[in-house]
Image (cartoon, rainbow, N blue to C red; front, side):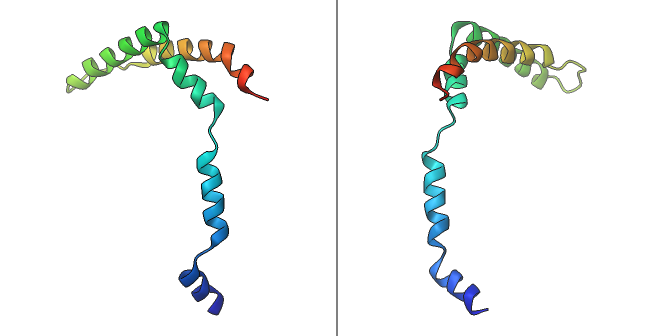
Length: 90
């Protein structure tokens, strides 16, 4: 009980240090994905996906979904990522 009260009053300094370390770490895959998502072919695929999403979202009852457009965008982005990600991995 005393230990719990000390933790409440003083906090845990180890947790704060771990949180700071986690904030500094950046996943290189996410960086490459963001860069590739801005490539010309990916931008075109993303535009098609967004058009589909707005079309489907504007209808109250539809059986259409944007699975094909999503897969096309992910395929284009991942194709770009595959060529770049291993250069940043140690």
